[in-house]
Amino acid sequence: MQQIDKIYIDGEFATPHGEEMFDLFNPATEQVIGRVRLADEDDANRAVAAARRAFASFSRTSKSERLDLLQSMIRALEAREDDLYEAIVDEYGSPVSRARLMAKYAPVAIGEAAKVLRQYDFTQRINASELVMQPVGVAGIITPWNANALFICNKFATALAAGCTAVIKPSEMSAIQTQIVTEALHEAGLPAGVLNIVTGRGEVVGATISAHPDIAKISFTGSTAVGKTIWRAGADTLKRITLELGGKSPFIVLDDANFAEAVPFALQAGFVNNGQACGAGTRILVPQSRVKEFEALIGTAAGNIRSGDPRDPATVIGPLVSEKQWNRVQRYIRVGIDEGARLLTGGEGRPDGHQSGWFVRPTVFTDVRNDMTIAREEIFGPVLSIITYRDLEEAIAIANDTTYGLQAYVVSADPARAREVAARIDAGRVLINGLAQDLAVPFGGFKQSGIGRELGTLGIEAYLEPKGVMTAV
Ligand code: NAD
Image 1 (cartoon, rainbow, N blue to C red):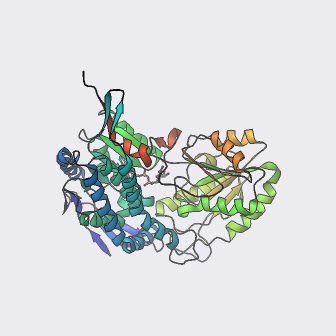
Image 2: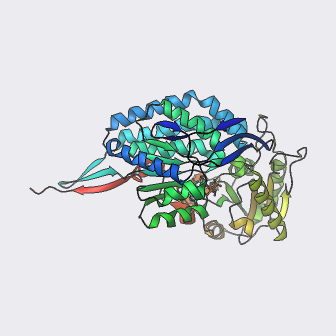
Image 3: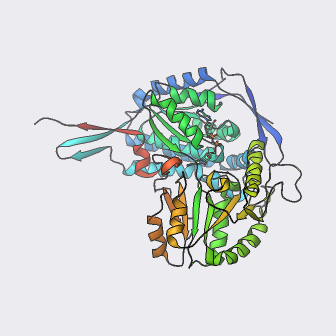
């Protein structure tokens, strides 16, 4: 049982002023595996003050000083890969293959920020003038539980690359992962106050940061509902804001697609991260003329997917993160049935052989209309909906008929045709014929999937304020 009773402020591990203890669970066993002492408003205020003090000098550091720090952070995180991997499996229920990837990705994300910094020109010339990109100020960073270490590393590395200092409010449910990342970043030898990490409740620490006058910018990843609250909280002080929110991504199977390839790809896109992924392809759009063929293949394939012990290498879907999340997913499955969708595979309850653990059955609904609840709301679990379309125009209309716009997928035998479809989809990222991702390409959402972009040049510029400098001659 791990006890976490320190937060990180001004270069030191400190006892929080907050006294609430919060249980940490292993979702595969439902056992308490740790307890974390949560920070409160006082702690958040102290962290902001430390970050503000540090900003004065850190904002004037050179590119090479920041690059050295990023390299040091990469080395420190790489040295903790195994610890992080264990924590991701135990605290989050990630299947081992994905947990290894997520543990490796934390330092990789820092490396991406370093690449952007290396090539970025903070002073651009326009005619006889200069456009200087200046660090915006103290960044408030708020992360969700579904890839906590990766989000901390990606956001903080980008803020640091830009010359900002930061106060981070990680998910309280991921405190073991946060502790490992904090220890590693402490080892990296950052100047005091550049990094501050205060684990606490969203409505306490998150809300304090979101409204604090000394926070210039918020970078938030999480649900659309909380994103809107944070935006409102920052409005009084006109905070710069990046919101990476939820999704209900369409997975468009064109009529020429090879289903032997499309079906496994659809299942990977839908069940990624135990179905708890913002970009999961949860609405599968299939041509009416070929839906029987698609149903037969996906029903069999999904029925063979192992949902269970995350430490079993054959497991594809581990448990959901919490009891609350398990209940929420069960409720959506019930709503899908009640609204008239037909279960092709899966359904309510745990997979066979499990009496405990927050395990769910990989579930695929068919005969889903795009106006049903399960097609409109983000479920955040392994529950997919097959929706048919008559022609390409209808497919595109259904794909775009959503309040979200984070990611989309197109599968076709003809990549040029798939790209034409991609051009008409309102989403921040479109994946054609595969799940290949590219961390150099900015990521973010259209519509209510977010505001702004992370990664790449747009990602660093989200932490910079442009200043025109003109000299009279
Ligand atoms: P959440 O919105 O419940 O919580 C996210 C973070 O916000 C947590 O740290 C939480 O403590 C904090 N928070 C809660 N209330 C707050 C408040 N009033 N003020 C400030 N902070 C507050 O999300 P979650 O359940 O942790 O994560 C799942 C959600 O995240 C899903 O909707 C998913 O789509 C989204 N997500 C988006 C992306 C993306 O890049 N677009 C990536 C991963 C997850």
